[in-house]
Length: 90
Image (tube, rainbow, N blue to C red):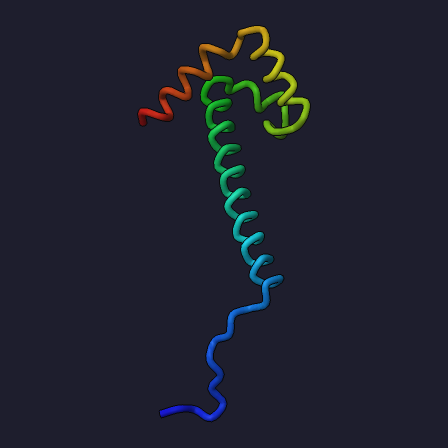
């Protein structure tokens, strides 16, 4: 039985298909970034519990500058490597 108003699914125009693809890619990249931030927050909380007392946002420019400076001086190397090993094994 066929409905008289039935129209078969037509592929979209190239612009709308490209827009759909860009939206999917953006969502994928956003999810990857969100998961990376969660992992970083977990490592910071576990290795430096006092860090969040000094910064409202662990991902702010000031907090990242402190982490970068500490890393440059070699203060974080042991902590972050141990944290990454723990995350990868567990």
